[in-house]
Image (tube, rainbow, N blue to C red; front, side, top):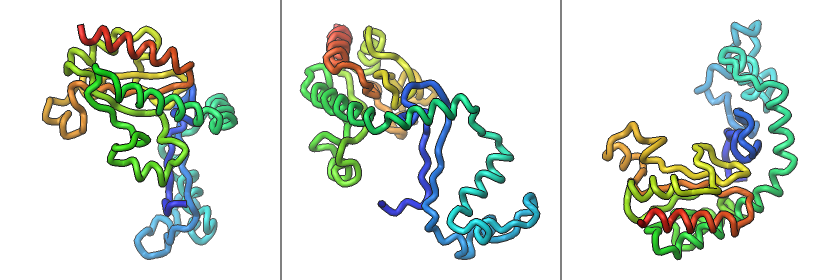
Length: 232
């Protein structure tokens, strides 16, 4: 709808939705002009497939078939039948889960925005966010469930908040039925120095949260009690 010719999803996130499988999805629009002279891999014979020309032979599905026949064969990222089943089952409830993800996430963002132990919140669905207008255009039903916020007190307070959570899960994944939290400066980006972290948008007080499907009162209770501990 918005002009993307190739879309890539991590199926591990919302599509699977329960942290059970690792996989991805590649979707081609079928409208890209592969015959513009810049993509010989699509318009010249493939030696590994008896001279087939993917764009001519498969037309709108040319890119998809090239990925299946060549990339999948060379690198081998084929899903097992069981993981495929997990993703297919996830798709059956995706539309239901996303409504709850977005509803809970907005409630968490608004709660954090008014919390005295939180210095800032970044979530596109919040008015005032620099991406708010884009969010209203592209994702009017809600900007998913992942956000970041700053815990007053820097690294020490951020780590203390994480360690004090009793209900939320300290995991690096996102897009899960469970609410997941992490302190990037001390975990996913700890190998970087302060300057490199800053260049990557990671600040000492930052916490990332992927809001899940649990009862919102339970989520907010754990956030509140952990924030209270972080300030002691």
